[in-house]
Amino acid sequence: MSDALLASRHHLTLAPDPRRVVVKLFMPGEDAVLVRQRTHALVDRIAGLGDDEADLLLKQTLIQFNLRHSDLEGTFRQHYDMVRHRVSRADDLSPAGRLLVGAYFSHEYAVEAAALCNPSAIEHPDQSALQDGQLRIAVSLRQIGEGHLSSLGFATAVIGPAGHLAVSDRSGPLVVGQRTTADHRRDLLAAGMTDAGGDNEISASVLDTLPALFDEAALERAIGRLPSALHSRTAAQRTLEQLRRTNAASYATAFPTDTRLEQRVLWPGTPTESNGMEDARFVRFREPDAEPVYQATYTGYDGRHIAARMLSSIDLRRFTMTPMRGPGARNKGIALFPRPVDGRRLALSRCDGETIGLITLDAESRWTAPVPLRGPHRGWELIQVGNCGSPIETAAGWLVLTHGVGPMRQYGIGALLLDLHHPEHVIAELIGPLLAPDETERDGYVPNVVYSCGGIVHDGVLWLPYGASDTRIGFATVILAALIAAMTPTRTTAAA
Image 1 (tube, rainbow, N blue to C red):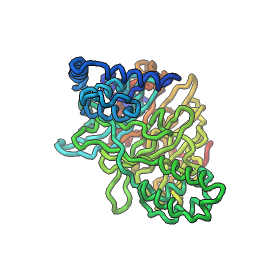
Image 2: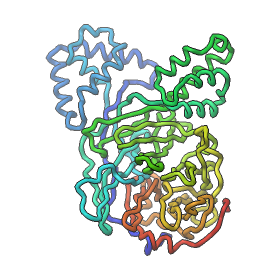
Image 3: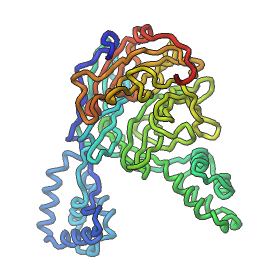
Image 4: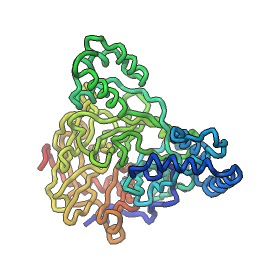
């Protein structure tokens, strides 16, 4: 199905590595009715160990696991602090005994033991020590582990000159980002209250006293200043609780400066993400006369519901996560444009689940209802079409990599071209798929799928990392001029 004359696959692939592990809190029997009794009993048994035995157990555990993790003792200490309210014999525990308690309440989690898929590529923040014609890129990864829990990770690669590709070593201990103070945005909080049906005089009074950027303490002070006449309203407590919940959907996380990009793991940080952070579509966004900032849309999943979310970072070390609001942000698969177009912040969406649409960020920081661009109408994509990452600016127009789903739920990757100044207009399309699963890519965690969350153009070549059957990641290259020349002109302005 794919046009082999256009897309060339590279032999190098990234496979899921079960050695890439993080340490998570472990609560024995956490799904059982007797969890409290079990944890109390476990701590009592640890406290009953002799000092020599406890010291030996801790020493053996550190020897076995220290090289696999960064600051393992610090993690054990944190986990002890999390469960110490269950420790009735704290006075009986030595410092080593407390670390041992932390060890018993810890376990390793292999972040990509099940699958590695759905990558996107962006320019790496570090472009030092390169030769002529080379570009260092950051490749975002969806990592899937036990329980189908997804987190976001990274790989570093160098592309060029010509078709050269080298991926940096991904070994070394992984580091999960740590929560840090976040600057919350008043406009996003207001937009969230509107979406939640909490836009009333109580929330308006609190919002009116907040600055454009604020922290949690400032929100509590604003709530404390709420006039007593409003505090007594029937809806007061419900609205104030909704304000706190809506604000808590935004957070920030950061990594130590000495960690390499490929060691960093973005782990779910809110209830809306509790079962996964999925399919990040990264873009290097630039406002006029401003430094570029890395942004990505991703899907938060809580086990039942999905939520459109966005992250931002200036250096891929400190990240701010926020919800996306408005009718245009009610499904997965949103992809941001890399710059404003005619002063508008734009994105691609798939609000109805099957049609590529164009959405705009309005003055209230809400994404508007989509303008349909392209619906499914060719055989290889009759189930649905969507984007495979942010639009790429070219002299011919905005290049949009698409995905289509056909018979037997086979996913292929195609392409559209949008008008550079009026992206509401589709001006050309690739009739068939650019890439479809070959015989080496059909089998995996989710069979018969090739899927990408974003490519990058370097020196006239489109570099396309893609997930193969939600199991491993491959790389393909396409001569940009050849791809555009192969597209068929059209002036479609609405879904077919």
